[in-house]
Length: 592
Ligand code: GLY
Image (tube, rainbow, N blue to C red; front, side, top):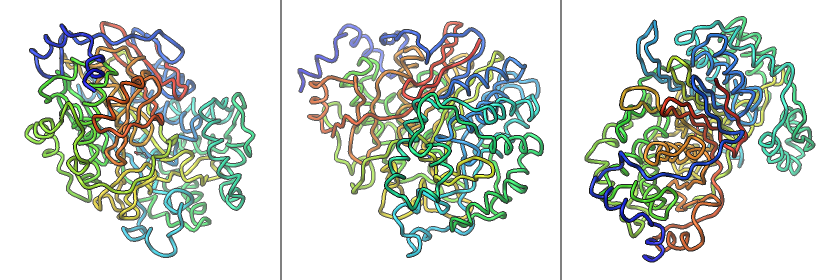
């Protein structure tokens, strides 16, 4: 084992220097290999948008070029994603947005976070999914009982009205056009559609129930890359929203259509639930890392806290991470160990802070992180229980197409990191047909049945039980890093269930610790671990057979099932703006 470990650390001289220096932040970090520019990565000089669909990045660029700021562009990107990534997000879902404004004429320099996560309906409590009538296997994932009250429209319009500069009609134009004129199905949409179609083929009874997804989005298993999909019904919804604002969605015609769709499928969301939906604006979770200030999403995101804990533990290791090359056995082991502590705490402590006490300060305190760091062994994993609560039976995590992340940086130095979700691929599969959008299945992000993991294999505590008005725990991790001089350096985040956290954390570590390009921070193969199930997933290309064996000997249960997170990164460095979209999903950045 030691031979394999040594083989993976070739830069002995650099190691000694860095060991002497201590800490994770290095003034002279090891150089990571830089990948060539591709369709998925580009360099700009003033502004950039990186979304996981080219049409969405283009929508953001259109709004920036019309004089809008990063928030205007973000709202345009998001509404466009609602049309062109129906498998991932949309007006039937929710999200988180972290905003940094730079010397804004109205607000000065300000960092804020918008929570527009879906809310639990009033008729659902902690026992709902264990009642005999709700015990069906997929009640928490498919159909109306899986749907939480959507927050996207309220959140986007809140951000636009408070921090944007253009009017609603203008920022909604690209989305309305995309819905009316159509968009071309790409590989990701087709793969997502086929995943669902294969299931529906075996479930004839469900094909009528989920007919919009089956007929319009999967084309009854016949959807092919290059096909044009039009959503004139969603164009009408977006026109109503442009015309009348959030009220159209929460009180008006769209609200009534949502309620009638949900009721027809035996669900419980009523007009009162929609009318009660509220956006929350909160301070970002702000942590120092490697001389930077990270602006992360606080709970009910678990992602910001887990990212902050992971880098906080790594920063306190006696031997710094940066002595080990990116993608070496040692760096994979150390990152995985730090992440397991963070995921164990996620499982044990986290929930919606409006309902339960989440000990954020304690979990991020110097003494706690130092204690966790001291437990990390360079030569072995710890017993599972040492990372937190005890072992449990867990299934493999499902792949996730139901989330989307985008990053925006405008020429005034304002930035938005935004992640949105309908949860699993095509959400609940239930569509509001009159308005052409899919409803989320975010209720599965709660602890719906104590003792059982959710669809992502995540163990959760009773703090995350459903309760009327409560928001389910999320892994979404939109993150902005400010440089030592206070300027936006990195805008990052990902989609992919709990792999959002590992992908975003690795992107930040690669960009900040290893000085990687945006393309490499996004594109190089990644690891994923979430403490439970006790597995270390390694993407193809990350470590060879001998190195994987070395990790197994350390106690990792190595699996080669590839994590499928998709990460969008903007990195400002040396007067250049690098923007990269994850080649795993097919986005393309735009900018100037
Ligand atoms: N629905 C995925 C997440 O919020 O973590």
